[in-house]
Amino acid sequence: MQGNAFMRVKAVLFDLGETLVKTWVPEIVFKRVLYSLGVDRSVEEIREALARTDEQFDNLNYRSLYGKTPYKEYWGKWNSLVLKHLGIPECEKLAGEVEARWFKHADCEAYPDAEETLVKLRRMGLKTGLVSTGYEADVYAILEKTGLRKELFDVIVGADTIGRVKPNPEAFKHALEKLGVEPEEALFIGDKMDDDYRGAEEVGITPILIKRESGGARRDSGLRIVASLAEVFQYV
Image: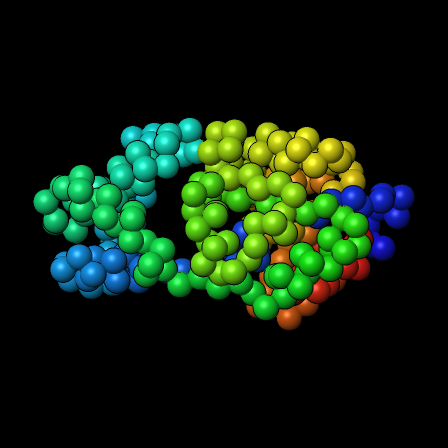
């Protein structure tokens, strides 16, 4: 095992999007959903509307409500603003339909190495967990759509599980507490440097950065980097 030779790994935690699952391009999904509702807008128009909504959420401090506000309320406000920026009369019902139809039109699929890695880890007697920045409703919808069984995880933490989102230490600590393991007994694999790698490292969890397009670890980076989940086993 690499890294801390004295550590005995008891649990392996994962990020979801772009780690276990390849997710969608938001503007493309939004276009499909709107088209299904009889509204036609270009991808460029939607991309601009999403960017303006993102900026507005920051300016009005709505972002701080993520994970603390109920799922439908948060995304209802988001979708209403996107529609407004697209020049579509603000309509609560239409915004609700966007949320309700999202996963019917969203492309997401599990990476080929995801399930086999989870199954192998569990057969080795290790606990597994999922710590995502998505709301629980989205996490479970993604698992169902991609065929990744929720039973493959001993704990699932979403943005609204405790109202804290990575890289907030409490999101990681909650997962560890539920698993009954200490930080130094766990690994965390994710694709984001700040939210995943640095967030887990700050708590004392051994972090691993997955960069599927890298073709392998940059040996001079000083980071633990893998190009596939199969490489994670060198750390357990």
